[in-house]
Image (cartoon, rainbow, N blue to C red; front, top):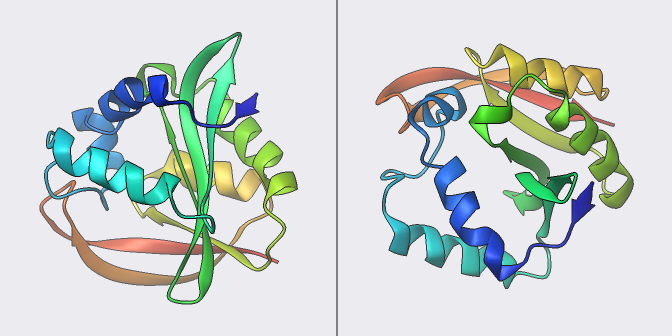
Length: 153
C-alpha cells in the first residue's frame, strides 16, 4: 500500500493539496495552494532531504494519498494527505498503521486542526494520544484556530 514517491505522482499530489475542502480541513497549509512553483520547490526540498521519509499511499495500483515524517524543532512529526474524493474509506488509518513500521523514531508527533475530527480519529486509532493544544494562524481558513498536538510513544 505504501511505495516511494515517483516524479509522475507530482500532479496528483498537487491537486489533492489544493482542493478547497481539503485545505480547509488541514488548515495549516501553503499560503497559496494554487502556486505550482511554490509546491514544486517545497516538494523538491522534501524529496531531497534524507531525513524526510516520503511515501505514496496506493490502492489497487492507484495513488490515493501521501504520508511522510520529518523533524521540526527537534520533534519527529507525521503528516499525511488523502485524495478528498476518497475520504472515509479507511485509507488514512491503514496508511498510518503501515507507516509506523517504517518510521522507528518515538515519540512521534502529529498535529490536526481541532475541527478536523476525521484526522484526529485516524491518529487515535493508531495509538496517538492528545498531549496538548496550540493556537496559530491557519492559511487554509484565513484565521487563527486551535490545533491539537498528538503523540505516539
